[in-house]
Image (cartoon, rainbow, N blue to C red; front, side, top):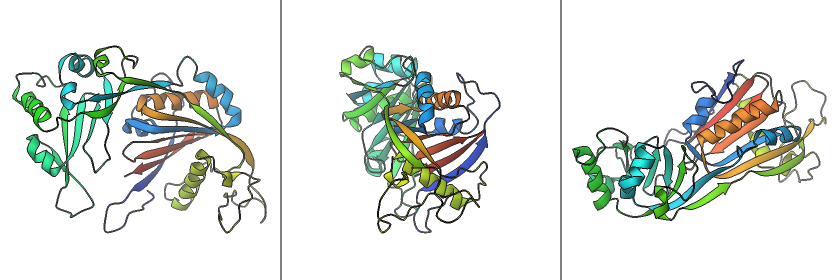
Length: 346
């Protein structure tokens, strides 16, 4: 773990792990209980997804993304919470279907609602929580240790008891009609069918967006000396490698061999292999490309990108990174038969 915390308040942490890939990987149904697949699945939705790889691997990777595998759709819709638990929308998308939804709102400040696998999670302030009359749990904050400023309420809408006439469901209906009764903007993605204007969502005038990858190049990039193995306790090397990956994914000109930045403005140097050459030697260079998706990406889509990279890149290295709407992020570097994973927890 790369610890960035202080003793006073909880701060973001970066956890580093490495794993060995299985000899056999089912690209259609990859393992769900092994890293790095568990890391991908744990972050349900992301707003930015990047694939970083050598330019020589780009053509095969793009071929692997054929037949629409490289695009996804999501909808933007205005709805009240009560709209989710009523009529055809409730029966079609929640009870019988499988949709993922995320409301507008700033984490830890505004009310934020999420729906995934039938589980509705609501994060609200203390005053709103006390008016709702639903059971929830206090959320840790950076204020006074024993004073909870925000609360999280989770409701499994797929339970048999979540139907009209049942006391628990009627309390939810009352809270949504009398307390959380404002309309908010949601991002919506249907995991069982194509996300479009058809179906019960049509009455809410959904705006459907198609996200396609954007490819950009970083030519002549100085390569970090990626080690064959990396001890999880070697924090300095793990941090240096993550720094290089982050700069490459952001197409930083500081990595280009012909970069002429004044050393007063940037003192960054790419790490050379241990014992390689003498002072003044420069790292090897390679042409890189970054493929980026920006929208409402589900973990299942990112998992497909990862397996496609495994299948098409062969022995070449590649990087998959994703950033969530709440601030969490991960970076997965595949090199040889190993994966190195950094998980940023807020």
